[in-house]
Length: 154
Image 1 (spheres, rainbow, N blue to C red):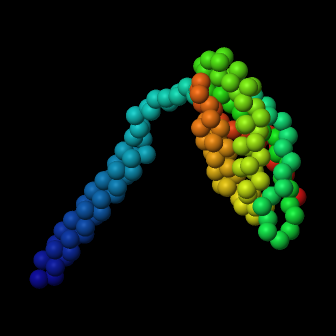
Image 2 (image 1 turned 30 degrees about the horizontal axis):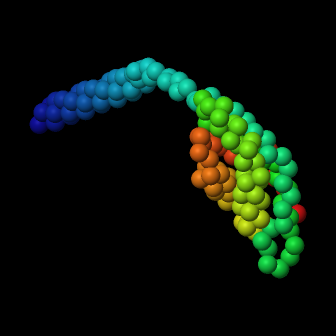
Image 3 (image 1 turned 135 degrees about the vertical axis):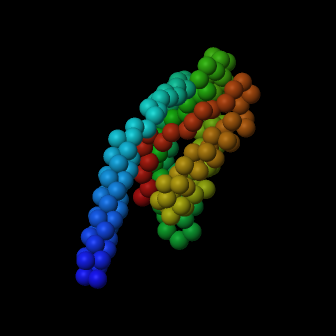
């Protein structure tokens, strides 16, 4: 009986050892396959950005803000970018409508409070508002963007 138990024990040890070796080999093979697997090379797609359109500088604006309790003002330099490829007639129209455009800018800037202008998102929406209102009066093309080259609230 002791010989049968010893034989069974040896068989069990060999079987467990074989399962352990197979498991280790399988784990190593999986690790090696995952770590050496190369992902297909992704092509870097270069998207051409539209070129900068003609630029018109409106100059510096100093406006009183719409704060109800305290007096605050805004000093900002405003620059307009016309659509790229726009005709010379659009640039001429912008020059002719400069008083209207400056009035729109002053109205939009003066309608904001100092608290509203502290938030960068509100400044971006202010640019969009100015652009949309100016585009509404233009007949020969559209503005691409409005830029603030300086912006200070006091």
